[in-house]
Length: 404
Image (cartoon, rainbow, N blue to C red; front, side, top):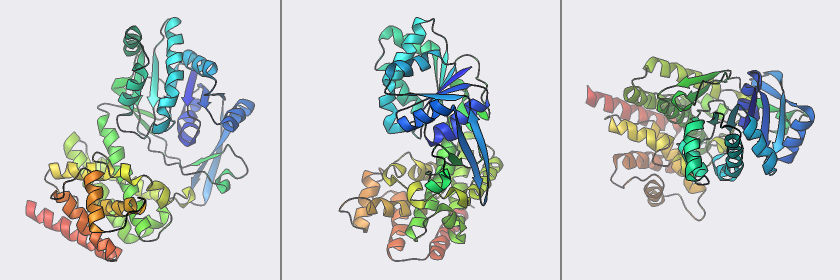
């Protein structure tokens, strides 16, 4: 069995390529980083280190090779002859890999049109639809029909946390990837063509939208809230932020708020979501990952978008008549970060209103705007974490008493 992993970075080598190799596939990585390509071709292996606290375990991933994505012939040939494919290149790079995928598909069709499932591991809403549209723009009408018949565009939810790899993590081996051990891969069961591939730790799920929203509105939401509050209060690392008792309570309750909304929308068991939150909170404490509040909180404009983790989960709660008392506190901290990163902008209520209007799509009289701005003003006034947490507690209690 042959597999193609398009992208030889942290997720490609530290997660999906690892699963492919462990499942018995001969794995060909496609990447444009020549040092990575050359090392994989020379050694046909690379090291992964599972890290947790002060302990680690080294494993060697074997049966791998690579081709350079700038070599269109080699890249398309790898795609034409594989049994399974995945992408993990980053949303901004997707347009650049489309020509090689199209060329590979055309070769497959010329040779009989064997089914191909492409597992899309990109941190992007509606990633499967977006990549499908990109591919079809370069296909003629006949080819588009073949695409619909023979290619499964399978969205995945990536839960493994892999930090930026430092020299200390590489420990003298430039190809080493350090990662946490968590390794489940939820995928869209309904999107596959033909039989499901045998891939270790793959969790086919239908309807998949629940897993997409669980990742975004629970995992990503909690991670971002932790990062933004940590950053506001001078903490550098995620494990430092989650160790603060007030931040931990705020993060936990924000995730619980969102979990309750997801439970109601999808009919999912709240108890299972609560167990997931408990596991996430423990994983956030993994100091060995060295994940920073700056990295996790990067690109705050995207994370404050209307359908993303902070505003999207808050909106879902409001639609159900619930008050996102803790989520909106995280959003206020994100607004602070957003303004700090906007050239020429100064912290202030008017600037915050503009961010919520232009970035989050919230009107000035929207109840969410009012909640976020009230927390934002408290942050500007130097309120302590305990004061912020107690304010959120009071808001949540008041909203529950109104329901009763």
